[in-house]
Length: 112
Length: 113
Picture 1 (cartoon, rainbow over the protein chains, first blue to last red):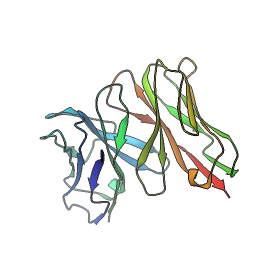
Picture 2: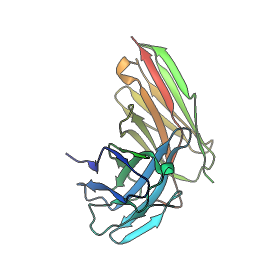
Picture 3: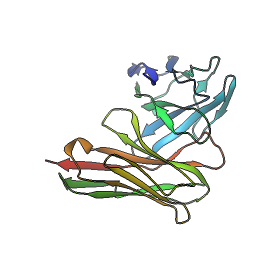
């Protein structure tokens, strides 16, 4: 089944403890993105990647890192999480320009 | 800066009713527009994708239209069912910054039996 898989689905962590949210797609998509969703603010892009080793900042990149060493994987790294990063995170992928996006099921992160 | 607005923010209808959800965007320079459905605590499910050169797309009971020049899209749901209850999001892909979707804040739909 063609899909975008995120792990974990739920995560509670403490301030400052490094964490990684994984994202993998099995559709050979070139483009991948991370979004966060917050009440009243909607979905905002954190980072995106146009291909292996090509990444760039979205609208809200502060406090996040990403890497794209393989085409299928696009992990989101929080080096020192803070409570304002408590949010619902989505990974998405797209085959190429002009194609629609496929989203993962989301990761609900709580930082205490 | 592209801004996307969805009206109404919430909508409650009885089962069987036909309904229209609205999406407006401020910059007509878009590549395409995509409608999504989001169930509580769940991911986004793509419903319809309309390219900028298209006027509408249909899938089952859903029909989405696009008027790029006026910055509007509508999602028409025919014969609504309780299972249609969800939040509906529209997102535009601007002509620049191809890898970014700009989302509206959604319309929360409740269909009562």
